Every structure is written in C-alpha cells, then in structure tokens.
Image 1 (cartoon, helix red, strand yellow):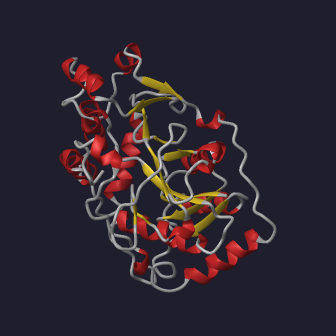
Image 2 (cartoon, rainbow, N blue to C red; image 1 turned 135 degrees about the horizontal axis):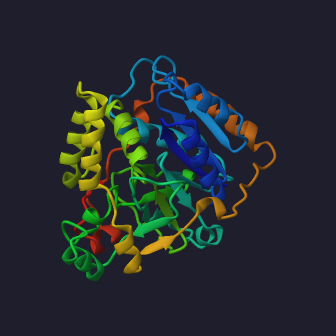
Length: 348
C-alpha cells in the first residue's frame, strides 16, 4: 500500500479536495495531522477525516500530542509528524511506500513505476509541477508549470517573464519536489529529501510517471488565505530569494491596518511576485494539463487485520515526547537532481 503523511490547517473544502485528489492519483491511505485542531472550523475538518475510510486523522493538541512541548517551527512539526508516521508503518510489509506531502500538494503515483524501483533503492523523487496562478479563478487549476531547461528559462528571462533564468525564479513555491521512502528502510524524511541514519542523502529513483502537483497559490483568494495562515504558524524557512517577499507578506498580514488597505497591498505583492503570464506560457507550450480528480485511481483496501494493526500502533506510539522523531537535513551529498540543477537552493 502507498501512504502519505501531511500536516494541515485548512478549510473543509480544501481538505476534502486534497484527500480526494491524492486518493484518485494513486495514494491508498493518508495520515493527516491537524496542526491546529482547536482552531475555528477544524472540528468540521476532523469529523470529515475521521469518517473517511482511507484516512487516519491525528489531532496534534498541545497538551496530549505534544505533551506541552509543541515546536514553534512549522517545518519542525511537519518533519516530526512525517517521521512518526514512518515509525508507525515500519514493521508492516504491506506498507510499501510513504510520501511526505503538504496540504496543498497531490502525489501523482504510478503503481507500475513504483514496482519497477530496484530492490536496493529505498527512495523515489517526485518532481514538482506547480499550478499556474491567476487572481480571479473559478474552480481548481488544471494547467501546471514544470521544471525547465536552460534554453526555455533564458527565453522567459529575455521576454521579461522571470527576473532571472532559473527555476527558482520561474516557480513561486519549492523546486526540490518531494520524496517517498520505503518505511522499513530506516530512511528519514525532511521536507523534500530523504536522509540516512548517518546523515547522508541516499540515491533516489526517478521516473517520468511520478510527480507532485503543487497548488502553491493558484488564485488571489488562496494567496491571501495561505499567507494569513503562515503568519500565525510560527517560524518557517524559505529559500534565500523568497525571504524578502515572505517577510513583507507576514509584516503586512500582521499589521494593524484597515482591511481595505491590507487587501490593496496584498494584491500588489501578488501581482509583483506570484501572478503568472498564462497566455505567454501557453503560447510557448510550456504548460502541462492535469486534473488529479480525473486520474481514476481507486485506493487499495487494507489486507485482513492490517487496519486494526495500524490503529493499535498509532495508539501505542501517540503517547510520549515527539522530539526524537525530528530528522535534520542531510549533509551535502551527490544527489543527482542537485547536480544537474546547481542553481537550486538546498533549502527549498
């Protein structure tokens, strides 16, 4: 079975799409951690997830889940939750792969591609596809940007579509993609890459049939919602080129300004940093079409007794401190994706 682990704080509508899209795209079971279970609207989210047969919902309350020691950093909470999930799944041979994805991402998995991973390779790479962003949008986007080679990046730079000829400038969100590991391999999970017990970055299998769809800020409404939530989520790391925009957005969202003033300048920052020239990208044939809800995947059922075994282990590992599940970034290694895209930041 194919599993995901995610830490989310979002609306019921977005979470329902997140679950449906991942399950339709090849995921069998999702472990979803509610990052702020007592916040407004999260009770409805928890009820919907608890009722879903292909989801394990874990409310991460400060008193019980975190035992009063909730990390301030969202990135740290995400890593702890993902590696706790790996530990839960570790003894089960029916748990074949675990992918760490965010609440605005969809893991597009292909069973044949994963079955073809060599037996000695315990991790795979999901390259990112980023949804195009437009201020006004009806419905979910189905057009995506993919990582580009130097020639196309240079063309976009000369046309004024990007500030510099790099995928970091082309993408608004991360460019490192996401990773999956075999839960029994002992590999840990960071936000984007796996890591061995001795801090090395292992080989990752690549296949064009695998990717992660990233709905970073597909509309103006989502842009505002996302940055309002991040402003309250605690410290979050961003790649160097994105830090000024992140700091400016957090400052604007948290400032004591009239709503109309805040909205006016949120729109300006959006236009300057996030809006895509969809017509240009379409004319140059740089966009790919994908509707995850139309992928047609059907989640696999648990083998006999497996659902009960999973629930028992979730209960057993829920008590006690969680800090020991945190995994540091790997030391600089020889990851092939990093070599052929040297301009990408190791942070995001």
